[in-house]
Image (cartoon, rainbow, N blue to C red; front, side, top):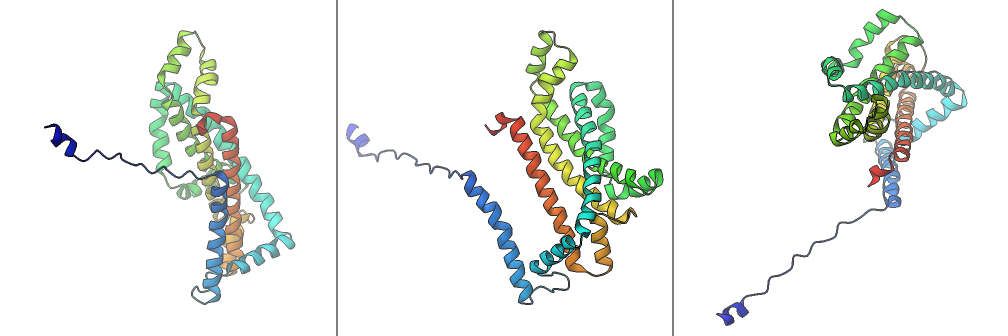
Amino acid sequence: MTTALMDRPAVQTLQVKPRRVWSKNQLLVVSIITPIVLFIGWELLSRLGVLDERFFPAPTRIFRALGDQASNGDLWTQSKHSIGRLIAGFLIGAVPGVVLGIVMGLSKIINAAIRPISSALYAVPKSAVLPLFLLFFGLGEDTAWYFVAVGAFFPVLINTYTGVANVSTVYYDVAENFGARKLRVFRTVALPGATPNIITGLELGAGMALIMLAIVEMLGGLGNGWGFMVWNSYQLFIIDQMYAYLLIFAIVGLVFAIFVGWIGRRLTPWAKK
């Protein structure tokens, strides 16, 4: 029996290949190279005739059109209007979204009253309610502000509520046992616990606010802004200029996401772990 045991093959140890860890610099290089490769491929396909330049102008033409808009001052004039609407609308929508989301997470009765309504309104296509805004507020800057605010409000509200609801009840119980008042619970438990979700909601809200800005500037009769220039360029079939202003939307969205993410990392250093 001993000989039989000795004749058995030894149990082989499973070798687990260590997972590769990418450094921040490597990830940054990938993030920079990817759009460059995309633009180079687009340029080559346009120059070779694979893409119809009437509808897909080469990136060099788009950047040239963007430079022309900057040199003649139109880009800065349109940016002044759009950035003002974006910031005003985002603040009008995001601040109430954070406050109401935290209140819903802390109060079951308020959550029961508001959550069905917010879920129903969130499902309504945002472009479909533009006629209502024009009917209520008319043509003007106020309409643009409130319309953009609606886009920012719901993502911030939902993510904030989710963040507060996901905070362990143990923390709330401890706060109550020590006699903490509602305002102190809000400041020391709910708000810090929900901050990572709030940051995510702000990023999503900023993206939706840009979409709403484009819609209201294209169809709201404002007569200026990035969205107006996209629509006007399309109607005049100045396609390279249309792509130039679409590129502005993409750049602003990227900058906004980077800025909000940077703030989030400063406010939630524990989230990295």
